Length: 132
Image 1 (cartoon, one colour):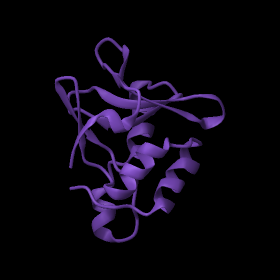
Image 2: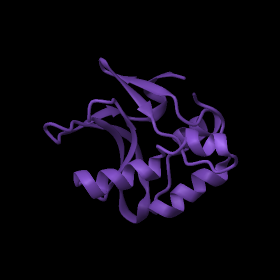
Image 3: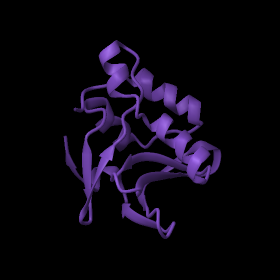
Image 4: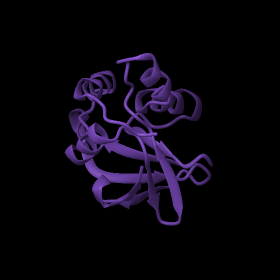
């Protein structure tokens, strides 16, 4: 279940990962922290920003962007320039690619876990067919 998130939790993740999330993604997540999107014929759950405002939100956001990115880097050799924002439950992930000095291009990519191929999913997060 997606719900609004205070911008300070987005800032916490930004500071922890050293990246600045695109405005379209930040604005969507502030309204609905999580949810899902369709990419081609697949469905991806969007990871939330970790929200510590109360116990219920801590439980609902434990699979946060920060947590999932760290796990993917530690256990699956995810390159340091990729930030995990969602997964399809089958091993593939949606990612942002970081550029110089922690900036993120608006493009969203689909990382195929079998081929390790990075495929453009959308030029901007707002282009993805979203469901809450």
